[in-house]
Length: 621
Image (cartoon, rainbow, N blue to C red; front, side, top):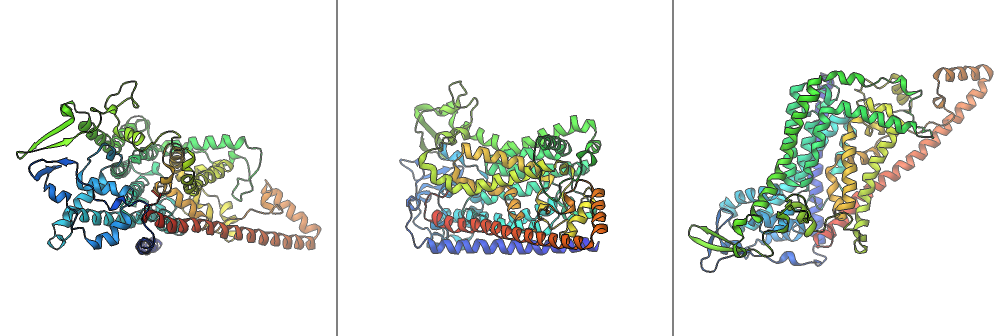
């Protein structure tokens, strides 16, 4: 109980520290952006133009917009824009996608291309903007300014909360305070810092993703190793598992309402129910890949003997009955996956009802009568829209407004972005892509060389499967089971590896690559992999070490023979061994410093450079 209380106290202290660091980081970026925005002229000054509503009213100046009674003069009038809001927020952070979010929050989805942006963030901005505007002392601000302030507050508050959730997730998966804390600190200074300060969806999306992942891995059930529970989704009681996955699906549903790729989180729900099977299959694949290798790795934790000496995972299958695996779990997966996908379906149906309704196609004009005030909404282009039909000549086999908009207006598609003019954007995205690839390849390389470790819960003190031999070896070189860098190589990261692998392949082939820097920060794996380089590293054992022998008994015999033959020779060998270890540690120390400096330089440099580019409307989206 005393240890548990100490863990709780330590977690709360680190949580409070993370909150302070997150706030300080946002303030630093804000102040820095204020300064740099004064030094350069905007590359594109169109953000200073106040666009009017497309609604036209020939006679009367009053109308109803999106069921909200407002006068068109108020909607069009931005003359009372607050100079304070403009100076501290609008002219700095209302750039690129922020313009769309604010526009949608104020006027709704006016145009077809606006449907590239999902509705939760603009909806929250509208709700809180109205609440802010309702206060009498705020009436000096226009409704548009209230929306901007609301979006700025929602974004930055979500960032702070998402950092707390990432810390909690790290505690649950690794049970390692140092590792979880380091990864969260790196998240606070992530290379997309200006986007996590501006009026963007990144922070809200990250908050929903991290909150859902916390529930996927049991939430408070495993937090701080309460009651000595060993992490394993297959070990959770059924009622607890259903409760946690339902909460996770609700968070992921909100993530889908924020950005379309939230639907991919269905894979984590599947993993929760079938983690033992998935881990077992992964181990079999890794063992096969290991058997095809013709070289030997020299990791300290490499199994000293053949694989058959490690326990099999067949016992994991005994925890679930056949009825659960074949009936209950598939039903729960279908229901919870539908919860996650539902916002996407509703949003597509909303677009279909607006642009594909045949009743609204007369003379390309929408006639609306509300409170006897008729006004016209001009429809430009061909109606109904081409994506409304699902014919063989269409781009999609079913009506998909989001897919059409991404391809038609934003030129998203397979290798569409591979042009000479986009080479600078590819260079900007390269560090994050390399970091992503490195996190995946490092994980796979480790487990291909040690496939049997895939059955272990994780390399930490609470793991019941870590051998006494391995623990003593680590302790002999000054490492404990919860401080060495291999804590990253946990079997529980398997779904994260699959997810980030897919995300990387899809992003570099289909998307605008310049968004990758901000797009990938919702993957905790990026920061866990980076944190690995800030942990103590286990050096490779010199070839003279007895650990290089396959048989422990042979090692003992060799040592006895050396002692009997020549004690002086043994003394010399020990001295040589210490020198080799000292040299090896020195080399690793230099390598560690280089890796840490490289990661910190990337994170800090992109914050500095990105803030300059974004705030002055240069190509940094």
